[in-house]
Length: 436
Image (cartoon, rainbow, N blue to C red; front, side):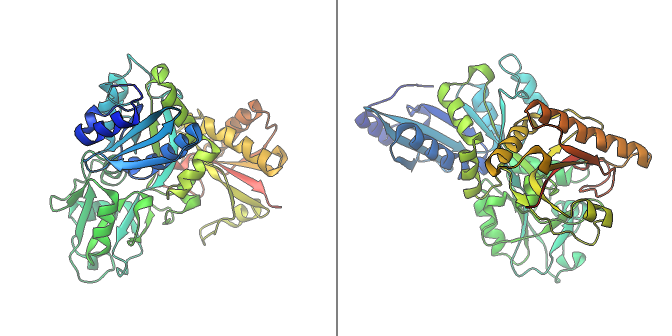
């Protein structure tokens, strides 16, 4: 990649005469349309304005889903290319040395991690950066009376096994399926969480590179159903989704930020470990900062800056849990674990610091917090209780290391699952703060 700061005249000449691959850019971001359509350009704009003190201009490159952002920087200009053609394309670009940052709406796949292992560990905190939380919204026409569906029912609909809305409580109308294309991380997430190995997408499905265009078409089709990132709901109706026997949840700030919502997912920026350029490192740091996360919220995604929320309990919540949390609000952050494990992941390590920062900003102390651990269903109640308490204790110890000392904790066993049996989302630690 060319790395220089051309004069304004040379830069303009390049824009007029050269293809995007020949643009002289200082930073190149490639990958997810979910990240690249609006969020990445917003983050880049704010970062460049902070870095240069000048306004940022944005224009296309002549190719769909690509943007070139530039700003004056002293006597020259600084430029950033954002190309949003799908998560898999971003990995290929970074692996080939054509991109500084890989934007992804799914975690790196095992084969990608392995093929990049001689240059960097994509699972390390140096390379993997969760920049936002998104809820994969299931969309229908606003006039559709159906309000919720289970994940298994979704699988049957998108595979074509269920083909008429009357089969799920709707009108006698054929179902029309809308889906993202094969290069999309949104598609990868939907395929993994909904279709799995049991179902295959119907050949009648219409495929899209753009979340927004898919949503717009669904909103105008009385028989339509599709899925898109939360920021692309637009004029469509969003369904509540259930997993197993857990209650159906709509994607909102609490359910998505805590990742309780069955189709919640993380949005990533990946960098090549120690080989990251200073400008790429600066942008990632900005994206992870409090200011950057505020921009995430403005973009329509869910910020990782914790806030306190009083949940609306439904009839399934036990009286014992209502009493336990009666004088508390819940923070919009969860610490999650793989089944049977207590090791915190990269996002959790950053969330620990966010909790500490929240306490400092709100003038609160560790005495105001309560950690509640949960477990997936176990062979007996005692084992589930022990696992849930150990998870809460592991978060307590990690907070101790950040000088948030001796936080109260308890376990709630395998009760109040948010996913079906075996779902890793059930193994979690919720963070509650005393109401003022």
